[in-house]
Image 1 (cartoon, one colour):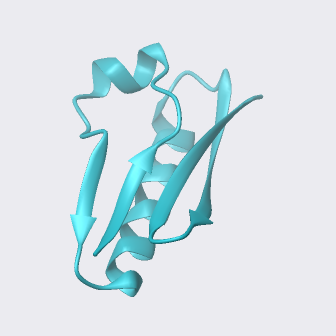
Image 2 (cartoon, one colour):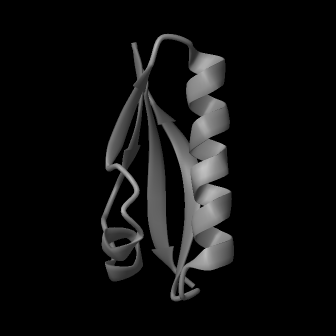
Length: 67
């Protein structure tokens, strides 16, 4: 089981209605979803933060950094 999860929920994330965690049976599907989420957040959120994907064991963590 592989999980995509968010490191920190900024205000834009909370308002987005996106789930904070999503489980997958397959690492490739989880990685694709994590990259899609990070890209969507980087393109549509307020641009105060930058989102990227980091692997942590069976989790794919979407990290948040100040822009």
